[in-house]
Image 1 (tube, rainbow, N blue to C red):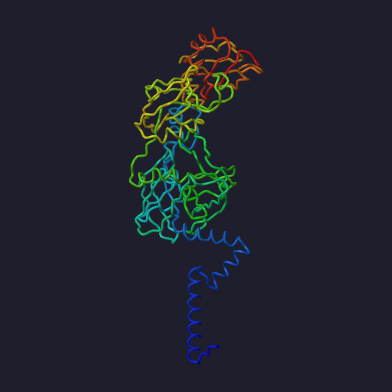
Image 2 (spheres, rainbow, N blue to C red; image 1 turned 90 degrees about the vertical axis):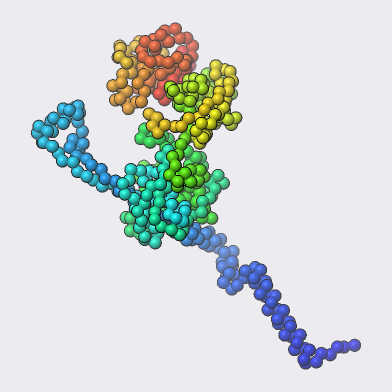
Length: 494
């Protein structure tokens, strides 16, 4: 039996079919976000994956770039008179000499300019940068990528961590998203954004350079000119040049993972090794910087050094983990708790200590006033010592006799204040090595002329008399502490 449809019924079915097809197409397009343009991009990305990566970099520039600013600073210095010259004589002599023959030399003011970068972290004009970018500045000018200029005001500084927050009178500004530096891995993309060479380029828009995370947990050494806590740094080969300091290092998602702080260079320019402060380090103090609160660091009051093979063997240690206390500074938390020179610190609050840097970081970020337990080894015995962490101070800063006889291949003499000053030393006690014989135990131990001996077998050496008393009766290997740390001095060349 066949069904026959009239024309009216056939037309109705046809219309229903067309409507169903159109609705299905709309649903499928909406579900998969398909359109001629997106289909074309997807095909291109499948053929050339580099397009996807390129688009990611473009997106980072568009999203993060507007939140990166230029910072210029101005400092006025006044110099003149004999400051233009070097005097081999005393100040009084030199002053009188110039007054007699040249009269008074007028003093002149000079302006010193500085450049750097920063990243906006709050819509009401709070900008995160390096402390060294604005250090000593009498005038700060912030230039936004759109060309607007504002006077910058320092709100808070962390000199030891080299971080600072400055404020401009602006609102509804674009901000950068802060990421998680603990999740960063070696080999991931890293993008540096900043204003290298400042206004020499004559363009307020920031520069973007691309590289990878080359290494993690890098440490830069402290110097006599600064006491920065440059530790746990992110190393990148993204080009960082003068003026990039304070700008953000971001991942491919556009999240800030670090604040660019330094480059390793022999020429003053980019050579493929740059460093950034992890953003988690900055986030830990950011609110206090915004509120202008003082940033405090924990402090024990000890000088420490890493454990090498010789020290490990001398003390009969199983490994080189931990640190050895090279000096206990008087009237400090460490001295009050009973720590002694030669103590080996193995744990801090139950956590193993890898090396000096590890302990320094743990102590530095411990709240002031907190009591912590140190696991130490003293004279072969394991002990626990409780120390109340103090606040790190802002600045941690004898009659001459005849030269001694040779002992184990070295000659020493008293360290005078004049000699210490000439050598730029901060120690004013002990004896100074003036001669090291070749192929001697002293040379084998790594001692050098100019080293200051501060203790022998944990017996303090204040002068030549102390040195003679100890060495006259000493036999076998001994532990020598100099201003550079501990060394093991053998009785004979091995």
